[in-house]
Length: 92
Image (cartoon, rainbow, N blue to C red):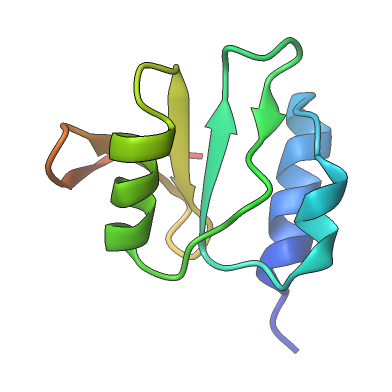
């Protein structure tokens, strides 16, 4: 059986010292997750997204001005947001 996104995200966060909010466990996880690096320690955003458009909306409207990192847990790549669309970043 394939590993679930929730398990992948949780393992990554624990290995990287990223705090996981309790709200993350309330719903099933999707492939795109955001990390807020302005929190100390860095914190996972409880909401995950199924498509890039929803992640872009979050960054443009709710995460605006914050140091955020979007990770694609299907392709294991960081996504770089330029204000309009995503480009592929480094693997993780």
